[in-house]
Length: 280
Image (cartoon, rainbow, N blue to C red):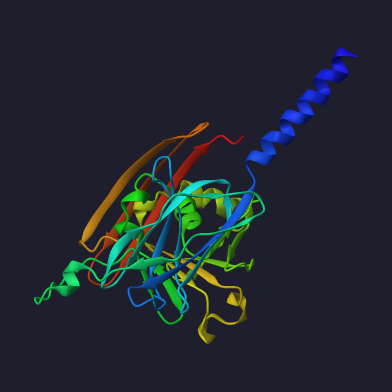
């Protein structure tokens, strides 16, 4: 009888644990001072307890932003847009199986825009929106320091990764992963392990191609994720050594090395990375 009671309690505790890790959805609308929708605003979903970046998104032509398949927790959002002042929302809670509608955010014109002078900056924005793709300039994001390529993808707009490590772009699976414009020869667990071991500071940018052109043929109809690696422009041999460590429920760490050779006619680039992590 005692064993039966223990077994029942174990099942109940396990069920409660799964319930606490459920998923939900959050939506909000970005407006300007004239209450017109703001298209192309960068919206960052932040955990309320430590302001850690969880996900990024881009507002559509109606100003709408959606965060799908996010863990139940307390969040806030940070919004930036060209010519408008940075804005923060109030805290809100995402509940399992529910859609949380965050009150519309109104963005004011930034003080820099109101100035008569013109300031020119060469720094690229964290997210750039082109006709057929989004570009995530990971090297310009402080939050990506010490992270892996896998972590950067999880935070990227339109990218979702399920519990089985299946990568989808705008809800479509079968995404083609490319490295420097060429399809990766790896797939499945090998690809995921490579992405987890690849330090983000070895990456220049991630291109999320949602509308592939004809040059990509039919293979990329579900979308293409092209990871562009950093390449040293100096002549001769050079390389880097990287290491990162993170602590959650369990520790995780990664290490890697890159080697580059360049002369006036040839450039050869290679890298090797290793990652260790424990799962629940």
